[in-house]
Image 1 (cartoon, rainbow, N blue to C red):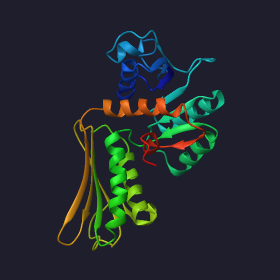
Image 2 (cartoon, rainbow, N blue to C red):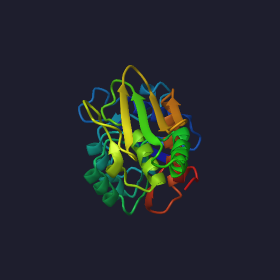
Image 3 (cartoon, rainbow, N blue to C red):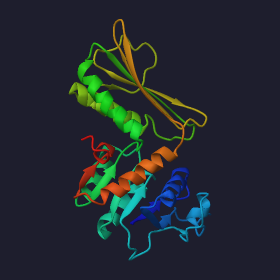
Image 4 (cartoon, helix red, strand yellow):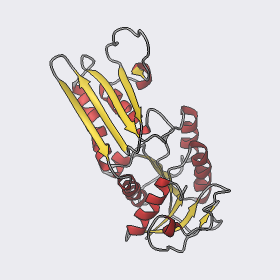
Length: 266
């Protein structure tokens, strides 16, 4: 039985993660946290998630001396770095779904968790993971004469853009073409920008309503186009994928893994 800590447990994704753990025969929730000052501190995490009472009240920090196997973190860059330090100190593995970390934060995170087994992904959906594989394969065949555009849509409350998943798709596309994404990415267009530069990878972002997540990669050539698309309709897809990663990482040596490792695609 894997003993799981969920940080940010009162948020939308946190509640889904609590629910996923409660549904599993192979995992047990041992702690749930939320930021200091939250009005939900002290509430049972299971009741808040809409499942049975789990006997785990939400606290502002992870208790000292707690026996746990893995922390699942879908919070903010600053909070994730703090949780990573704690995980490294206590020998607890991590599954990280936090997006919006900049290059310096990613480097710091890697250094903190260098001796830990960690799964980090921008999207824990099995379908998205397979899409990344397909995008890389397609990009290796459809070279620069096929214009590549990544179009993503999310709910109105999402704070980062492009989404972490869109950036991962861009990385997969760039890997397939054997180029660096930073060298070819175009994140915005406005005014008289001129003709599209050959080999560029464009990003288009939509924010509105309650869209869970929609990602499309368009390869537009002369006379034909190819689209690889993934649409999420239920956030439980991400929560179940994250729990699958949490159960998997317990048997791994120290290192940084992603969902392709979890699914045996790497």
